[in-house]
Amino acid sequence: MDIVDVTQHRGEFFRVLQQTKRSQTAVMTIGSGQEAGPTETHQADQIVYVIDGEAIVTVGDEQRRTGPGGLVMIPAGARHHVRNPGREPLFFLTVYAPPEY
Image: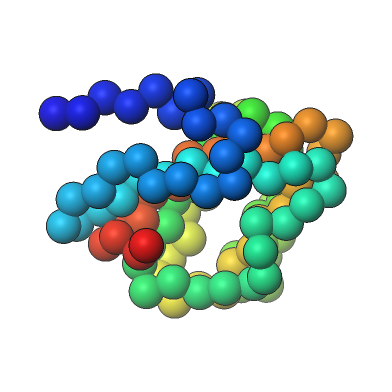
């Protein structure tokens, strides 16, 4: 069993931390006013858990703002997008099931 200190990867744009045949964990840091990338879809379910900063998460036609402790479930095949509207970096943990990257 590996234990990963996710805080050691704060500031990295994207880093896969752990993976099994059925799931994968990763962290992502997005600068102030920046986006995670273009709107996308995945073949896997994705869970986003905000550790630091603010996020605007769009899933389909719904948009929500959240901060530390916010948890979002993105179903496989759903169009989604994450951006940082805040002044501080957005740092979050994401889980893909099954592995995406």
